[in-house]
Amino acid sequence: MRCNMFKPSAPLLACVLALSFSQNGYSQSAGMGGMPGGGMGGGMVPSAQSSYNEPLVVWTKPTGETPQWLVSGRQAVESAHQIRVALTKETSCDLLEVPLAEALKTLLADTNISFELDLRSISETSTTIDELVTLNATAPLRDILLRILKPLDLRYHVRDSYLLITSAAETSTYNAIQTYDLAHIMPDNANASQLVAAISMTIAPNQWSNEGGDNVLMVLGSLLVVRADEETQLELEKLLYNYSTSAIQSSSPATSKSSSDGEDPFD
Image (cartoon, rainbow, N blue to C red; front, side, top):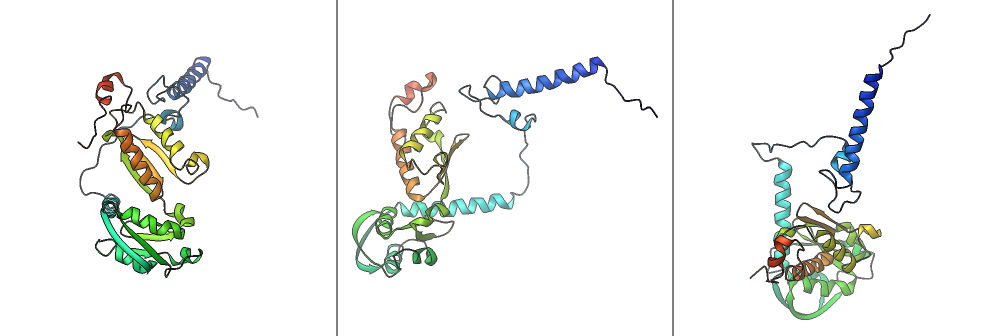
C-alpha cells in the first residue's frame, strides 16, 4: 500500500525558517544590549527574552486582602529590624569573670531581645556556657557582643525574634539576608557594578559565592541584596556610608555636580 505524505510547500517552509531566524536573531541581539533587556555594558548578559523565549508580560497588582506570605514576611523583617536597632544602642558593661550565659543575660536585660544558646554547636568547641567572661567597655551592644563571643570562637545571629548564639563554624548556616536601597546613596546605577566589585574584593573577599564561599551579593533594581553573617553586614554598612560621603557616587553627567559635593546624606 502506498502512503501519500504531506509535503509543505516551498513558500510555507521559507516562512517558517524566516520566523525561526527572526526569533533567534532577536534573542541574540537582546543579550548584547542592542535590544531591550540587554546588558548595560553590551556584554553577553542573558535576557528574559533569550532565557525564556517569552514576550514581556506586564502584571496588574491584585486588589483585596494582602496575602499571608506578605504579612508574615513583613512581620519577620520588622521584628529582626527592631533587634538590629537595639543592637546599635550604646551600652556599658563591667563584667569580671562572669559565666557566659549570665553575662549575656546581663547585657540584654534592659532590651527586649531574648537569646538562645545553640548548645549542640557550642559543645563542639572548647567553650562552655560557664566560660568566664571579663570586659569593661562602653560601645554599641553589637560590638560588645562580638568582643565577648569572638575570643570564645562564638558568634551571634539575628533571627526573626531572638538572638542565636552558636559556634563560629556554624556561621554560614545562619547567614542573614539583608537589603540595602542604593537609591539612598546613589542617584543612578552608573557605578553599581564597581560598587559590587569593591565590596566583594575588600570585605571578606574569599567568602563570596563567586570565590566558592557562602556569601551572596547581587543588585536587584535599586536594591543591594546581601546574604552574609552579621559581622560582614556591619563592615558593609560602614563601606556604604563611606561611599555615600564620597565624591564618586555617579559618573552620569546629569548628576556629576550633585555627587561631587560630598555632603553627608544624613545632614
